[in-house]
Image 1 (cartoon, rainbow, N blue to C red):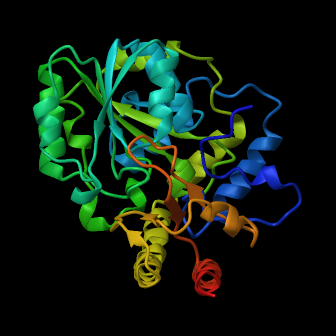
Image 2: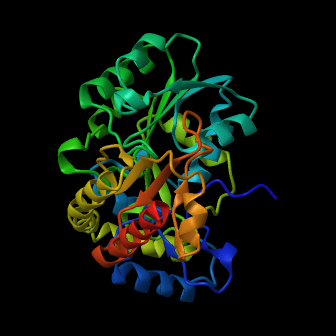
Length: 354
């Protein structure tokens, strides 16, 4: 079997207690209310899940300030991407490079030609107006990640708005993956919800996995102003995509709208600390706006393996299009956990000098 391309695979090392920096989640962990609600959902699982997620969609609608009719819930962001690719059947699509691998996998699995728009490290891997210049009629789908994974860089609000309008004009569906947006520095958070009624080709992808640290429950949702597009998405998969425990947990999460903010407030000073100390050790670190960091070293192409010897797992980003050996991503975790990672890196650096 091909090695998994994602972070969070702590199961490969059996009973070892692995400190996982490869999955970027809210450092506050899962809210107690969400965990308790999921357990209540287990007790209620002698019935099929609500295929329309009525109560969950209503809770999301109240939290997001959008009509419930503009919401579709799914089994995490990855499953929603598969549904979108199957529903839209795009012939030509564009994705960023580097970015989340699941976009390209889902598109290619449905016979789509994928065009990569490469971001430049010397320009901080930022999305610029260069993207507007390469958008052409005949492109069926454009997928953006804001903030981008693995770089943590955000797209300026004016540019995003112009991209929305350009895609609407040339009949290109624009999917903006905002899975990490609620954990992004407040001044860099862009609100595209007001454009949903103006730009019917706009789809916003949200994930509770990251903001509520509940990846094992698998829950995400789409926001879109086009009911026909949402109906096509609904028909592109099984009717019971969201389990009863996940629906219960999602409703509870929508009553803790402060949780992502609390996680962001915890992560911001720790991210600055990690950035400074990594740079002091000689790593090249890109300024991130989110709860993870991309960094590069020419010293080790096996840094992941070296840290695994110390029971610490980081994300090897060498397989991302546009990157290569020496690129790594780490989550921003609690102060004590970050200290343990930094201590391990300092030890490696000292060993290298010996």
